[in-house]
Image (tube, rainbow over all chains, first blue to last red; front, side, top):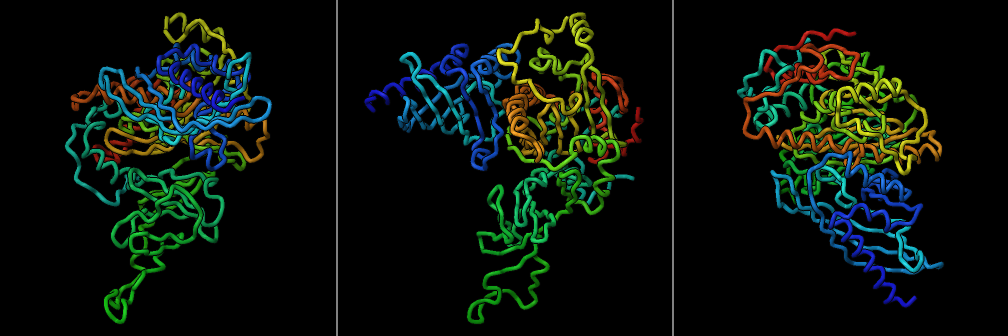
Length: 161
Length: 425
């Protein structure tokens, strides 16, 4: 595939992914992934030491859905909103239409509880390591490893990165 | 034996209630003078503070930079395999000696003036000690043996490394006591394998978390994921067991039959017994029968040991300010785990930690207390669930462990006398 067309498609996917999370359309989030898939949020210190434990580890679209249901129905946390800033996107096409993507991200979190209402802070910075595949003419995420530099999580992590 | 304290700072002014343990003045979560005194009397006092797993320092020369209370310390393993701990503060002019979180070396050199220490914390090198061309340098009576790093006592039990500033603290095995040792025996049956860390910074006083992990009452009411999937409910069997002074605790729960539990919830009309929703992917909870039930064990002041299904972890509580603490989860399995078991532990780690489906709320719960009490130093919390005594209780609707914590805390802080020993059920 033409590398500029491919790059355009990857950047569009990343932007759509960010918009989905930043506009609280979490129910649509699992649809970005294939099934099975891998979505893991792993602290950079574990990744660097080859230690397997992640903050979030999902290996099916069902597990992603369960995260969303828990977010909506079970988990208790302060109301907040995200803004993803994704940049330094690198795209490499492998055989069989497999696309390897590296990108950096930063997430600004705005707190919406009454005590901190309207306060924005840098919540998380890190790297996306994605493996994308074409499914029915659309790019889907087969693997997304979010390597979190900000491994000291502020308060908690409930909304996906 | 009354707690002996190595260094005593003047007591902050506090009206410590006679009904200590049952009423807790919010001042203890708000007052910087109390926070400072805790560093002296608790973290540098007659306590054993968890600092690392032995599995984190397997080889000679391995080191880990961590904290006892908010004092930076380094834990090391020397050439012969012995463990040591020292304050991470150069004996010369006070700089951090070890500036990396972990690594392997047998010499630690302060970057400021390159004073060098061995893995035991002894001073072994001072640049220009005799000056240059007969000028400068240290006086002839300079004795490097007098200028080592501030060493802590170190002891291990069950692969857990503890350190203490106090020369007077009882031996670790005695400090843990037979009940706590027995519960550690249950978990640490064979060599463990380190699986990773997660860290959480919580904007609340560390003692709100010490309460939280001694509190089975909240477990099924705050953590709705837990309840909905039947991992834990207050209607389960279980109880709280304490050491002889009530400072350490074990919270253990196990399943009774599902219908009895559900009926009790529906009868009480509680929000956390929702119509059970189904996991789209139940593999999250598919584990192996390894241990019956769930155990949250606390060792005063800074350690929590957990076994929730197949997730095994220690949690280190590190106070950072009167209104902030860091919580570090260190996950482990066993050296003889097969690949499938490793995958189970990896997947079930979703349950706990900062993004834990059944634990993320704990930090939040402590934060909303900190936010609400802000101006009410003299008001107090109510800790009467399960009565007003400190004792072992074989039920999960009790705050006996929290009362035990506060009674011992009050004594160490000099607010009151040492508590009488706990009645064991």
